[in-house]
Image 1 (cartoon, helix red, strand yellow):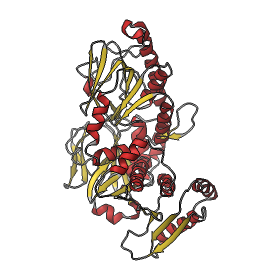
Image 2: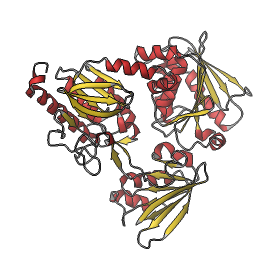
Image 3: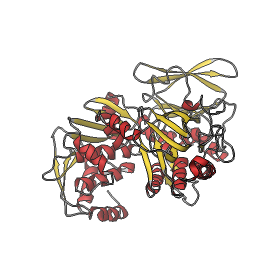
Image 4: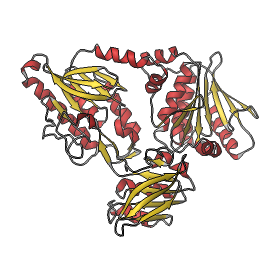
Length: 522
């Protein structure tokens, strides 16, 4: 099942096991069960601390397997084969069940262990989803730390009838005690915050007690990370407040244009950015959304959704951007019920079905090419009279027999049966005629919107919502700088955001040493 290279890597990892790991497999005579048996045999062969027991007719999903250890109440199960992106989740689960300490702050571990109540989580994933491993790994670890938490990670492709019955049309989708708990990427801290009802108030109280920063960065993407590193290297008091560290990079599958790194994936780059920031004395305040900005008494104040407030001598706004929506009737009602924004994550759920891709730029054409290898048929819809993607991508797209291209088309409505998408209405911009497509999925790929609505009455913004900055990253409010995709700087690229973040941080430091109130401390 595993090639020699993976076996060698797995063997090296499993040498870190502290205690035995007992694997209990639920199998039958199906081909999928034989594949699972082969995988477990390869795992067992890599460590004498691992044993495998096979059972049939035990009431569990088949094929599946649970990871346990003698003397501990741990309930971690994988239903299907955790390969692709989820192989890493399997390796981590083996290590954590086997007693290897997780790389998580002790305060988070203590909070996870202290949670009271009984929680059964079920996570539906696809092997091609780059967002799913974070969710699976977070819930696996929670189940390892707390005996009253159970978690099963389910490969949706292995259980299509279950996916259909539950109308799972986006991954990751998490159920808690039989009810939908959440969809999309989430972290261990976010899960704990949702089920530990007192955590938000405790966090807000702790934030309010923080002393003013010299530089406070709002946003944890590439621009925010670069800003924090450059500020911390100056030896000044630096903080980062972010809704989720990593930002939109977390939702990016393949990155091939970050100079000196020929290829990486978004989650890997985001983890590297955070690790780099943590090498310095930076106060990272995660899972907090900024909602207010004001300047009083020589300080800039950032108000958070939790009600807490942070103060700083200078602020760098690196709030990034998010996927642009179509803003047509039916889009909100059928989000994650056929309307999707990540073809890599959700594409496998539409195998054999008909889908549309909205947008003829590089992202839209790449999505159509990828989906064409999975679904029955793809219709690409572009507002302009011609596609805007690179010519090499257009040539590839036009070779695919199961792809139709419609230009000069404006999507006007998403239709559905009350539970899931069943069609799309668009206007032919040349004739004005309304036409309907019958389909099961819609992938929206029409660009980005800056996350700046909360700044509209405070800073100068463009009509598109971008923060107006000068050559130094200075905004219209003294002491407030901005960098990255949220600004007027052209070409929204990761490498550009990193450079702009560094520049804004240097400008903020220059502002500090030239400002009488900040010169002595800086």
